[in-house]
Image 1 (cartoon, rainbow, N blue to C red):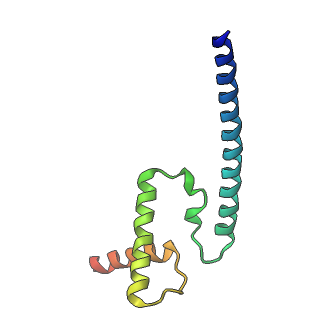
Image 2 (spheres, one colour):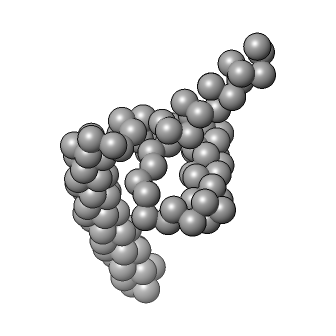
Length: 102
């Protein structure tokens, strides 16, 4: 008798867990879509960030480093309110590499 009650409680616990997880996944997907829309609609934003949740961990770490560079550069130049996209940083790095080759 005790085992069957335990099994029923366990079954409802797992069922509740999966219902909550499905609801959270739906919310998370909707939030990601809203953020993707905002990023893709902003004229100075980098479209590289649309669907960023599908990037590998190494790619996310690399992008994070670029944003850290942007933050440090903004602090040094005291231009904290100047909008910058990651594309600005990547273009600057390409130009620096080209200048070094010359």
